[in-house]
Amino acid sequence: MSMSTKEKIINQLRKGYSPIEAGPKENINKIYKNFFKPRVDKKDLDFFFELFDTNESILRAWGFLGIQNILKDSIVYDDEKKMKVKNAIIDLLNDRSEIDYFGGSTEIHTPLREHHVRRLCELDPTLIFEPVYEYVQSTKGKMDVVIGDLLERVLAKVPNSRVESLLLEQTKNIDRKDFALKSTIINAFENLGETQPIKNKEAVLTIIKTYLKDIEEEILQEGNSEEKRKLEKLRENFFKVAAVLDLNLEKETLEFLDTLTHPYADLPIIVTKYKNNDKIKSILLNKLSNTKNPNFVKDILLSILVIKEKIENWKDLVIDSINKYQIIDGDLIVEMEKVDIYNEDMLIEFLNKGDKWQLEFIREFLVNNPEKLDNWSKFRNEFISVLKTFKDPEESWSIYPNLKEKKELALKVLIDLEKRDLIEYSLENFKNLEDDKLRKLALFTIIKFGKDDVLLQLKKYLETDKESSDFFKKFWRSLEIRDMQFYY
Image 1 (cartoon, rainbow, N blue to C red):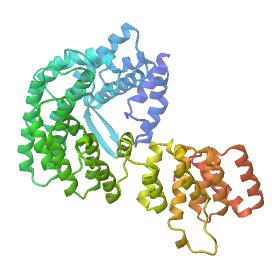
Image 2 (image 1 turned 90 degrees about the horizontal axis):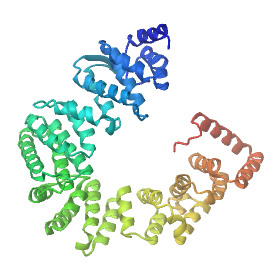
Image 3 (image 1 turned 135 degrees about the horizontal axis):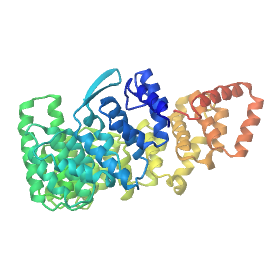
Image 4 (image 1 turned 120 degrees about the horizontal axis):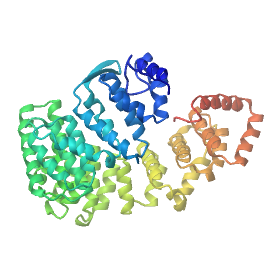
């Protein structure tokens, strides 16, 4: 690249900055597209290192953005470039300059290091670990959002014996009421526990107990506010992390669960940890009896499956609760499948009755267990029967309860599962149905998954029926506009 070309690019980049191509400012979008992205596509690291080495904040912002964009998809083998990356990282983290850019319609004024830290954390941890560790280790007595991100998203995710002591040291530098940083450090311990055993569990346990005490005191002062709800979410996460890290927080956790009155997605994780405690069973059964919140019921049912051996009528409890609260949840369906809690007759009953929630349950079930549509012959026959059944023109829809809804389910399942062996039934639905939505569903299955014989039959039919031919042409044009994607 000639000097004049380089100067031209740099002069353009000085006019404005955006971290994304499709920002709110059209002139900056053009700069991104025409001057920044081509250098990224050419993987011109040297150019971006040169930009970053300037003393102009806007060029440094572009410079590190370019370095990060290239490195996130590249492996650096060259020792000289590794050293440049290391120096750039430390330089960025020590940079206290600020930049302006637009996020949506709002102009954002932020320190460069805070702006780029999340992008830094996306890079290969083995490449950036040492400079990040060197920087964080040098900041003893300090703690801020940047250091917190580095601890949680980089250092704690790399197996290294030096990280645990560094995390413990940094907990001393968090203000008592800075619950955002406390949450970050606890999440860092959770990440660390996924990469290597926690050696000093007592120290981590003491930290979590202290943080929980601080949260409790703050919650009592907040009243009924949004801030209180945020603190309660943090408290819930701390109990979950304690369970994941196998810390001895059983008494406090059970007391917390005893007072729980709302959905808690991590409940099954905690129950798994303390499943040998007899109180868990009574807590779960009490919650199930006293809540009417379907989302909370779902969490309780997932937890009951964890300790099912302790509950004599666990299958009935789960099935009755699903019917009572009309619960449709992919995670619950997956766990139910593992313990064989449902059977073919249950799904046939749902299909024959055809309530809206039952049909949605069948669809979610088949998406998670597509093989059942082939393996369960009785259910398959009922499913095909829905596709083959049509209302007599002389009769009322009331004679065919929920037939429209059942057909919509069946056609959507054909699309979800790409059931090419059943597409032949879609042609008859297209021919015989009057509902435009259902006809479009039937057509889409034929267009996307139909074999040559079905496509030929469709072509011959369209040649004999002008109304259907016009309907097809209009639908085809709408598909072309949507790149052949059908949003139903």
